[in-house]
Image 1 (tube, helix red, strand yellow):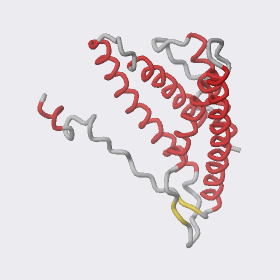
Image 2 (cartoon, rainbow, N blue to C red; image 1 turned 120 degrees about the vertical axis):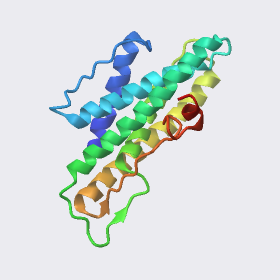
Image 3 (spheres, rainbow, N blue to C red; image 1 turned 90 degrees about the horizontal axis):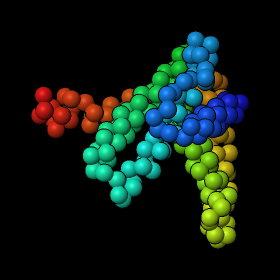
Image 4 (cartoon, helix red, strand yellow; image 1 turned 45 degrees about the vertical axis):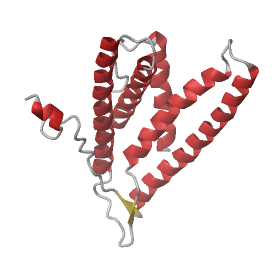
Amino acid sequence: MFSKKANTIFQDAISTYKVLNTIDQPFHNKFDKTQDLIAHLLYRKCWIDTVQWAYEDIIRDPNINPVEALALKRKIDASNQDRTDTVEYIDSYFLEHYKDIQPKEDAKINSESPAWAIDRLSILALKIYHMHLETVRGDATAAHKSACQQKLDTLLEQRKDLSIAIDDLLNDIANGDKYMKVYKQMKMYNDDELNPVLRGTK
């Protein structure tokens, strides 16, 4: 099933990042896009999410230097755009993959595209990783560990349900029971022509 492959790749990306565990480490995609494009995209997607998770932790330091915080905010903005672009690349992969499927006359559209559901699956992998760490923290109280274990159980159930939903959606598309229709995000705040503040600086 597709979700099993995705979840395995997400765990691999997180584990690889955590070896050095620094936002400045170089990125090397383990998957050749000419041989396994979807694996290449999934690995990149989760790596972006993992780095951004670290960015979001760092910027919440109440003692962070304001100049460093602004620089980090710029990195978060760039990371968000990279994340969106990668999600759209994943949807483009599925559009190409299913291009020869003829939807049935009563085929329906899903509320979100496959890639945006996969985006949530990648974030879930990070939540599960970090929540698990809280259940085994040496300096945490028993009450804290117990509360985090309950949250972890919920996250694991959520991943199971979301994985099933993604596999069902892809099967429905492959069978013609649903069809894909992708809308680009068209983010306006990063566009020099659409953001009035950026436009005023030109």
